[in-house]
Image 1 (tube, rainbow, N blue to C red):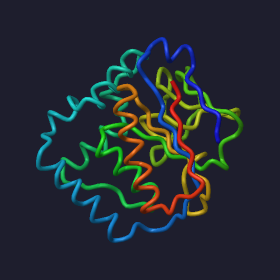
Image 2: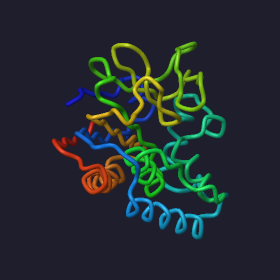
Image 3: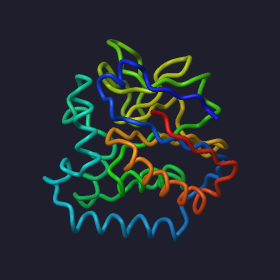
Image 4: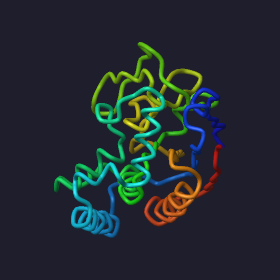
Length: 220
């Protein structure tokens, strides 16, 4: 089980936040028809019932935007991944199809409005702390290159920063070779919504990721 904590600095800015952590062995491949259909059904429901101008009012997204502002980051410029995914779906572009694990992470994020980190455990070096990004701290984000993480809530291991609610990094990204997977549900809105998201995550990981040796815990 990966040791994870929230820094005193970040906790002082966002005292209500928790992290919902799930670690498990997974089997990675293309998403099957059942998962793809579930993704499509969720997309259609969100697109039908959630106008673009109401996305930021969804409780988990609203809490996350508030957390960014508390840390000194503009959530409109550095959009949270859950908000970006929801906006993409409402605009009719649909969810990305990468592999079963990344796809189910995106599905949970769309369902809950919570930004979620997904990492290859074997690429994490030592213990993990979530803190606040520093000036000129290097960070290569997946699909977007260098990301300015100053004032951004970020995960760091003993090597460098590797995860954030805006975009995870290339260094610890999930690939088809990933065997042990860490999901972190970034609960800026508190424990209740985080626990609900964890229940959904365990269901989807078991059903679509063939999860084994699953461990789950909450970091306060």
